[in-house]
Amino acid sequence: MQKIVIVGGNRLTGRVKIAGAKNATLPVMAATILAPGISVITNVPRLRDVITMKLMLETLGAKVAFEQGVLTLDTTDCGPHEAPYDLVRTMRASVYVLGPLLARFRRARVSLPGGCAWGPRPVDLHIKAMEALGARVSIDHGYIVAEADELKGANLHFDVSSVGATGNAMMAACLAKGKTVISNAACEPEIDALARFLNKMGARISGMGTQVVEIEGVESLRPAESAVIPDRIEAGTFMAAAAITKGTVRIANCNPAHLSSVISKLSEAGAQIMQDGSELVVSAAARPGAVNVTTAPYPGFPTDMQAQMMALACTAQGTSLFVENIYSDRFTHVPELRRMNADITVEGNVATVNGLDRLSGAQVMATDLRASAALILAGLVAEGMTEVSRIYHIDRGYEAIEKKLSQLGAEIWREED
Image (cartoon, rainbow, N blue to C red):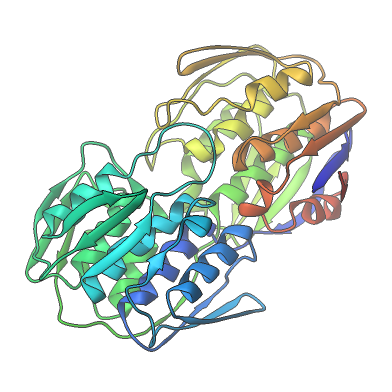
C-alpha cells in the first residue's frame, strides 16, 4: 500500500492540464454495450475506476483496448452475463451496466454496488426506472435481476434528482418502444455528455441539460466515437489548491461554463479568477476569506467539491458553514482534518469551520475519493510533513495528482506505506 507525503508551505505556480472526466467516462463506456461493434472514446483518464469498468465490460464479453488516453471497445460479443460482486463492490458506477444490458438483451444480473464507504446511495431509483419501462426486477442473493419481454416508453419522475438513475434510465429508454419522459432529471454536464454520445449512436434524445429529458425509442443503435469532457471536479480541486497556497495557477483544458458555482465561491473567498478561452487563471495574494457552502444538484455547488472547499475554509479568516444536502454522511474527512489542528464541529448535515492561521502536518487517512483531495490540499499549507495513507481512493478519480502538484512547485511525493 502507498501513501502521499507533503511538506507544506510552497506557493503553487504554473500551468496544469485537466484530464477527461471520470464521471463522464464511465456511463459512456457502459453505453457502448447498447450497440454491437467498435466504439472509440478519446481523452480518457487512466484512473482506477476506468480500469474497473474496463474489466467489467471484458467480463461481459467485450474486447477493450486502452492506450494513450484512447479506449477502443468492441461489444460485438457482449452477452447478458453477470456483473460480478468482486468488481461492482469496488465502484458504485458499475450499476450503469444495468440499463444497457436490459435494453439490448432483455436480461441483466448486476451485483448491488459498492464504492466509497460514506452515506447511503440506494439503487431504488434505478430499479423503479427499469420497472416503469416494463422490466420485472428482483433482488436475488445480493444481485439485481431484471428481465423484460419488451421495454416500453414511460413517464418517469424522480423524487430526488439522481445522476446515476437518470443515466441508466436514458440508456434503457433508447431501445424501448415509444416515448419516455424523465422529469426531475439530473442536469449535470456528465449526463448531457452521455445523451450526446447516445445521439451519436442513433438515439433520439432531447432536453438534455434540463430537468425534463425526452427519449424517443429506436429499434437499434450503432457504435460511435466521442471525446470525454474535461473533469470539472479535478479543475475545481486545482483551483482550490491555487487559492489555499496563495499561488497563481493556469487551469488548462477545462470548461469554465461547468464551474460557475465553484468560481463564485472561490471568488467570494478572495481568489482572483480570469478566463482565457478554455483556460482559467486562478490567483490569490492573501489568506482566504470565510465562505458558506450549501451543496445542491447542478448547477448548484457540487458535493464532490465540498471537502476541498472545507480544507480551504480551515485556513480562512472567520467562520464558514457547510451544509451537505446531497448525501447524509459526507463529513468523514472532518476527523482527519482535525488531526491537522482544524477547528470543525458537525451537527447533522451542517459543519462549522473556524479558520486558523495555520494547520499542522500529521499522519492522516483517506476515507474516500474527495476526502483524499481535501487532505492533500490541507497538507500543502500545513506546517511540517503530512502523510496521507490509503491513497487508493485518490487514484479512483485523479490521474497522478502528486506529479501535477509537484510540477506546480509543491513538495509532494508518493512512497510505500
